Image (cartoon, rainbow, N blue to C red; front, top):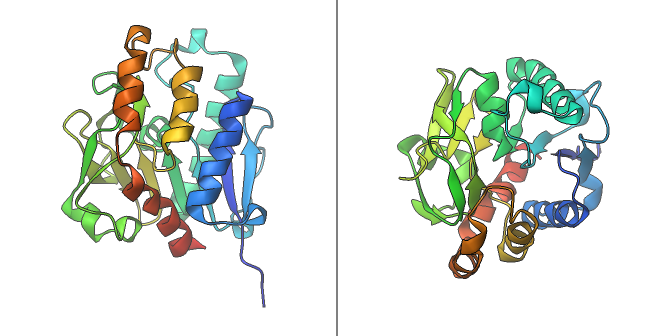
Length: 245
């Protein structure tokens, strides 16, 4: 009997506390054993080759990188990471390989497919109510989710228009494109299906001056987010593993 293939969890950030928390929440909410969730630090190690046959799927974590930053202002690591991901998507999209891009899925998968990313629908750190579309309700990735659910967000850029190759699966008033699918197996989210309150709290403190919220509003942000019930959204990660694992 062949052993189940592992999933590749790709990170692009360097902050140790956030990295540790990031792996912890993905491991818990996917339900995967550590041996089946391999953490790859793309900011540190270039992804030269990828062998699809070795893996069940890819999860791309959120990122501190802004894709709209002018090329001349990006540091060499960001430029190299973006090139690595673009090259990876060149390989994955034609074979419709299982892929879940979390938040950074907008700046990577959506942009790769020709969608427009802008600052029009930026959201401060918060927990908005997100609603499934008809297509979202029918998609197996959202099995067991209610029609409307809350999830943590926090981004300075977002999808403004979908590419022709994408299907809208979830939306919110403040950010119309919250979840989309390309092909049958490739997904991108604007929200964070992995974050619970302890993990978000670490980020609120770590990114206090990164433009995700006005620093003077930190107490309000903390109180509002701590009170939000985001328990339903974690099911997306368990579903991803159930479908492709």
